[in-house]
Amino acid sequence: MIIQKLAPALILGNTCIIKPPSIDSLPALKLAELLDTLGLPSGTVNVITGPGSTVGEALASHRGVGMVAFTGSCETGKTIMALASQTVKRLQLELGGKNPVIILDDADVGAAVSAMMMFQFANSGQICAAPGRFFAHEKVYDEFLEKVTAAAKKMVVGDPMDEKTQMGPLVSAEHRDKVEGYIKSGIDEGAKLVFGGKRPTVPPMNKGYYVTPTIFTNVTQKMKIGREEIFGPVVCVMEKFNSDDKVIEMANDTTFGLTSYVWTRDNERAMRFANKIAAGTVVLNNAGSGGAELPWGGYKESGIGKEGSLYGLYEYTNLKRIQVDLMTPKK
Image (spheres, rainbow, N blue to C red):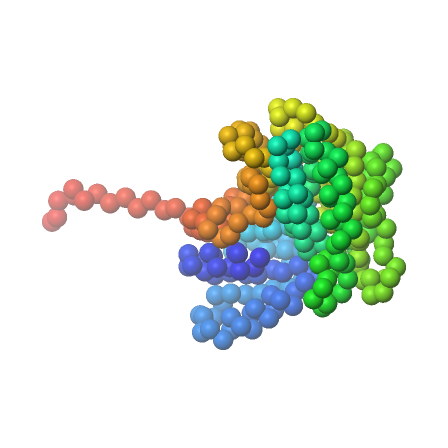
């Protein structure tokens, strides 16, 4: 994620300051060691570690910083916007998502579940583009739920150093507690917990920040787990639908607009959904967000600006107009 921002910044001739997250600074410091061997001019790339509440806020508000590019939570993104407004600096913010996955009545349910469940549980659900809400048509709802539950049961949770492990722990005890808080709120608000939801007790997972794959059904738009980004291995299966227009309305009923996924065998129908869903990316019959050649960025509270492609490069430039009167006679 550092390289996603550092590469275009350097290509366009900028000097850079990297402020890694406090709980995960070592990769950035190792990167700084490697960059130091390349012969870059002194001060081209700098790494400053420390809490966001002090170091991050100082950088976001400093007049010497011309742009802030940030990936993280909506709450932090809003704080950065407020601080950056003091000097009216350029921003590129890639924030959270509550990404809808729509399984239509003519979809290949097996393919949809296989792709989306691997993406849901990858990195223990700590991916901004991961599924947030699953909408299954009433004709395929039972089949979808059966296959989703079977996929969750097969997920191998364990030591990240074990090659057989498919899902490891969450990033910290604090984040684990936050995800468990969402699970509790889902139960309290009336969603049906059909799988998981408990902290594992079997070694080695009893000593790590683990949350097992969890599945909720009967999740409504008003529930906390149906509105907010959980950022963990929690599947939220929303209420059944039988109308294309209705499910598009429900998919758009969110403060987020990062990405979305539609599964159908009808390409014309898929494009109608793509045109009507309010999200920066609509993926049809697949999972993932593509590569650096494609623009990436959300609508609404999912952020501003783009990463990747030429659009992402342009974020790191200031357009300057230079006007010369070539008609002035020479003396």
